[in-house]
Length: 77
Image (cartoon, rainbow, N blue to C red):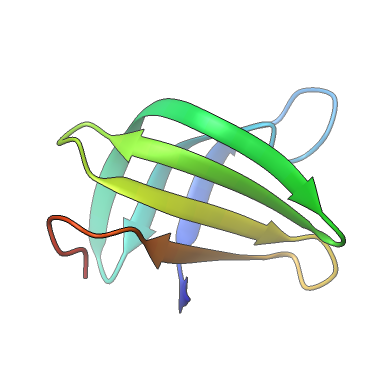
């Protein structure tokens, strides 16, 4: 996992839906959220970028930090 900066929509709670993320100085738009789920202490989002790249964005509630998992395809960062 790599650290990442995420801009998200926050409604009833923080990190309701990621909108953009910045990795190593490059900003990617989130075209769609394909899946989201909770694990103890973390929120996970499987997202598709505007250029059809799929990544998993993870928010750690305790550390208040985002991380990213590249799921293959076009290289990010």
